Length: 391
Image (cartoon, rainbow, N blue to C red):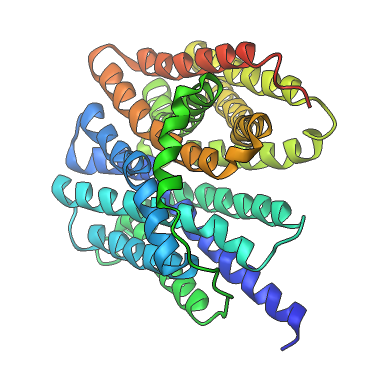
């Protein structure tokens, strides 16, 4: 096997890891099916996605320390093994306790996977092409997110009598692809990075939150991810409540959101280098604002789909701009900033809880207001950065 051919094989094996990484986004649609199956309140159902994302705050630093000791590839393999175990849990029994355990393990494994799969790429690609491959990895991850709601919908309709799995066929599908990806990577030779002791670097990352720009960026990432998970979770409910349709018929709304985010990411990739980052950020936030406000007033299927898609396009590429501007301002703190921004995905644990409480005790539109609060902060963030976001 030639050098170039083997490099492609290495890239493909890591790309499968990115596809597995997308399993984290299935928690939105899965929580909707669990709510119906177990007759849960929205508050109790929305705790489940939060149980996945809370671990970004808790486990990112310990994962970095462990990865530094056992190596990036071994960390990825360990992560996928744990993730495979998580996807097996719902196949045996559906109860609230079992699903809590499943989502906790799923969250921990995904934090480990995200923290190790991204740097693993640098073991095989050390040139300017690294950014391109990471961008394509994000595309693969988002494609996985897009597929998940449709797999659940197909399972709910066509697999009711297949060992009684129904929508849980989604977990079976991710179990199979995770095991395949684990074996593929295990038999792929990747040069191991030199070991070191970066524990002080990981822990000192938290001290950066004393710096105003870093703190603002950290909260911005929390809002970006919170809006992402919140929209993914509430989109089917909007169609169910406003159109009076079943969850099976409304499940496509989550897939629509992800395909809009996927398409938006591709479009922004070509545009982002032709306009200033400041203008790009403002356009994205304005699209978010238009999309969420539109969800308040529209009650038709076409209208809801259009505004859900607008939110997806607006939220497609905010993360790279947020993190890049922080790194541009403080280039010597690149590693520490990256660690903090991964921790910022903890926002995905906060938004669903407040949206669930709002939906149960106030009403549907109040849950959309939670998304609006996050967008208002992003508007504020943009105004504070108007002198620093330049190119």
